[in-house]
Length: 95
Image 1 (cartoon, rainbow, N blue to C red):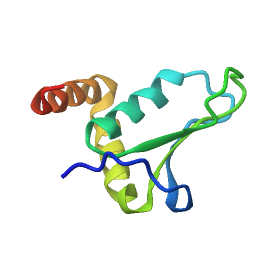
Image 2 (image 1 turned 60 degrees about the vertical axis):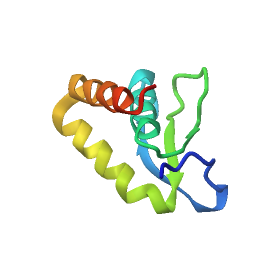
Image 3 (image 1 turned 135 degrees about the vertical axis):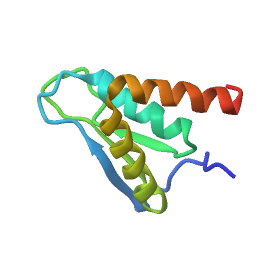
């Protein structure tokens, strides 16, 4: 069963953080889509039009280890591999 419920704010942990001043918003959004495609509800913190503020992705503490593993695997295969894996997962789910 997939976790599609919104995480409880009191149990959120950061699993991915864009460096302050980072301008690569697509990286944050790609990670967020990867996690959500794998049934992990996310909260994007710092979503701001100001490019000098970093953004981070938080998930429920119960999903943190799995989320970090998915992110590490995606980084290991590179962005093209992560997008391909996300598309494969979505195709499996029929979305």
